[in-house]
Image (cartoon, rainbow over all chains, first blue to last red; front, side, top):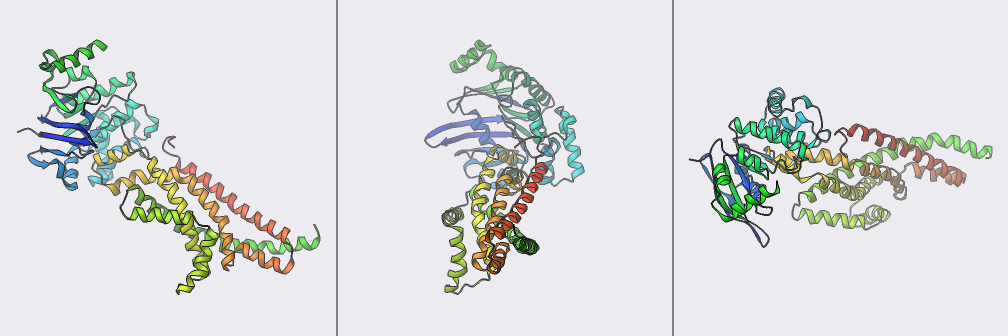
Amino acid sequence: MSMLEIRGVEKRFGQTQVLKGIDLDVEKGDVVAILGPSGSGKTTFLRCVNFLERPDAGTMIFDGETFELSSIRRREIARIRRKTAFVFQNYNLFLNKTVLQNVTLGLTVVGKQKKEAARETAIQALERVGMADKLDAYPAQLSGGQQQRVAIARGLATGPEIIYFDEPTSALDPELIGEVLSVMRQLAQDGMTMLVVTHEMEFARNVSSKVLFMDDGRVIESGPSKAFFDSPKQARSREFITNILKDR
Amino acid sequence: MTDRVWDILVSSFPRLLGYGLRVTLPLTALSFSLALLIAVIVAMIQYAKVPVLRQLCRFYIWVVRGTPLLVQLFLVFYGLPQLGIVWAAFPTAVVVFGFNEGAYMAESFRGALESVSRGQMEAGYCVGMNYLQIMWHIVLPQAFRTAFPALSNSLISMLKGTSLAATITVMEMFRQAQVINGRVYESLALYTETALIYLIFSTVLTWLQRLGEKKLDHYGGVK
């Protein structure tokens, strides 16, 4: 059985139906790239999966537990979130906390870890993203790429089974994208399960194992990334890939 | 300046200062504490969009900001006794000043709360924190930093505003100046002296504000 099975996710904002029934299976160790043009609903889908938006319909099977998404309870959401991490486009670091505190806060407040243990866990996580030399810096003193790496460490430290990335490099200056992508590539190699909304085709093609291609709130095509890029089945996918390659 | 006026000033100064320190400052401190408590609660209720309570808070702010402080003082001190509600002058002043300035401070504080990016709250949820934990560790500290100058403004304005308590028989610094003046009829000299003491007090508060801002400004330059 898949580690995460998502069926029929629907979401509407007012009169607009943004998601029209999204399905997705994620196996342990999968790196799923969620692709699609702007406005296709991919970010909304990712936010629905971690309940930053409340889906109107759909089910989720996570670790063998089934959840009805439209009626899920707050306590169940909290339980799911403890097994997941979320990396935002705008990093969303806690601005009043240092790098170290950003990572330890969840551990001490939610995980009830002792300060010393949390510090150790946090430093390990920060070492994985190459930020262990900036423990006492505040987010405002860091570049975007550094902030995003701290945000990844904040997620890693809680020991998630899956990490969601919402366009993690879209807010970054071009020269800072590489450092974040290389951290993500390393995580993928370490076997971390990841769901990545991205416009980085290089990453999608070479690092992700699966692609979920969305347009207009629907899944147009999904499957192994190699197959998607080498021989896309749908006309819409071909068009998308051609357009992307043309821009290069 | 005649010797007589000089003598009056010299002998009244320690008295006035004494009333300032023993009455005006404690009155300010108590009223401000009450106002701060009210402001934080009222602002948080609105920030969290709590139904019913939120409407009550809007109503409170609407009424208090829309009526004069002096009228509020008279209403509570001279009006409410007709309904059998009788409070001594000093507590009346504390309550009225607290509720009055609390309404303004609630708005300052609400603005400060809303200036903290919602993304940080989402990030808090995603690391597993609940609403209160996020408020306590993330949102409130940043909001206090942002609201600090506005709250300091309120404190200084309240310090001066306590002179209105004289009108409901609280024997504070200004009332004491009136009493002395009633004996010696030197309005210009005495009220200038009183004004100077208020100025000294508010100058000290301004220094404290600057000190506080320096101490709070430790987010690596983030406003």
